[in-house]
Amino acid sequence: MTGLTFHQFICRSDNYGLLLHDHKSGATAAIDAPDAAEIERQLDARGWKLTHILTTHHHGDHVEGNLPLKQRYGCNITGPKDEAAKILGIDQVVSGGDRFSWDGREVLVMDCPGHTLGHVAYYMPAEEAVFAGDTLFSLGCGRVFEGAMEQMHRSVTQFALLPPTTQLFCGHEYTQSNARFALSVEPGNTDLVNRVAEVDRLRAETKMTCPSTIGIEKATNPFLRTGSAEIRKVLGMEHANDMEVFAELRERKNSFK
Image (cartoon, rainbow, N blue to C red):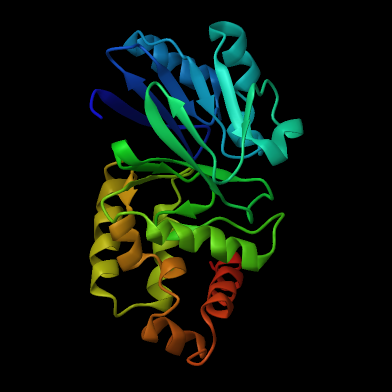
């Protein structure tokens, strides 16, 4: 489909705010609601009215804006069924594997436990866009707070099955710090070296590094590259399975400076 505008902006300190707006119908959705005041400013500046919030998970920096925005706009809030009790103002619950329509567009719900147990992502095939929350970042992935490492591995790797042209929208501007870690485990990856140079240039100009694409991430993101011979050699895990490599990468990233 056409006619959908993606408007992305930084709020709080490093959260991404994202609005989807259909100029024909007027429908406007926020992917998560990290900062009600900033979302309202962005809406007012464009003359848009918020009709929906699509929530990926229950963490406060993704849902704090729910009730103020609902009070002002009367918007409908969709979120993960397994976290419904923790998401204020929720109207519609969804689970991995569900399909629903937003403004005539098919939305596929991806089950993404790991960062939180009920985390979901939203994929719009016709728009070639996926909204990953805090599961997959550009050049990185989320911390494992509530789930098991095996769950997070499955959650992250499913994104690699999407078409490579799919735009990846994530929850935070973490790309530059992720890039330093990625280079430490795969310094010989030319695609990664070029991506890091691009990221450094964008950040020096105070520009955003996302959206990325699934194709870019498959070529550069270590958490989608557990089969890389160089990564395995750096880790000393040449004969480990992919999940073991993923877990070691995540543990090393937790303490990386």
